[in-house]
Length: 209
Image (cartoon, rainbow, N blue to C red; front, side, top):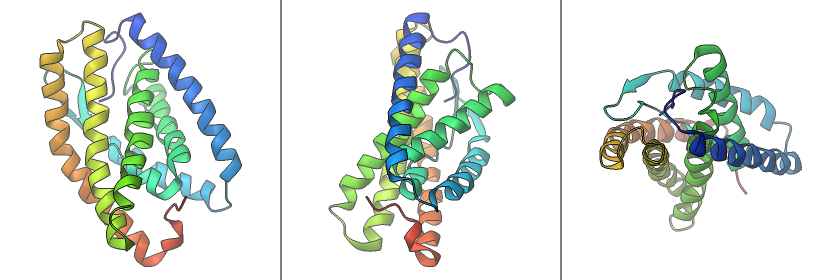
């Protein structure tokens, strides 16, 4: 899902950069109003875990690559805005240090994974959780939202590739969404396991808006 340099045209990556920069500015402002003492060290721990999970990549025909996202896990523990910032920081480090994803495409990668995957995934989680109560609701909601977030973020990537003329939508969308529908199952299981463990040992760490 990390789009490399040269895969997006300027009329796609420039707006993506502008939207992502503005979105991250908004997230920083929101986080500043709700930041708690436990949030900063927890951001470090969650970011390190997600960073390690994202380093495992799978090649995708007609697209770029597939991997675990971790956006919903970050949002469930940190909240949507701190979660989005954590994912953006991870993507930036991966881009600059490990050349995983291009610098021109970084805005699009942040848009797909921080905003569609993390913030969008969080609100899917929140809606489902309002229907299913208790810890069971948290786990079910996190699992479903994690799967949805991966598929939605990969679909956003496919649309950007199509808009740039890199790969036709009829090729990129099935390839990206198809492989990520499978990856999303693993994402759901891992998210559910981590959140279940946190609920048992430190339920106060689960974000409660």
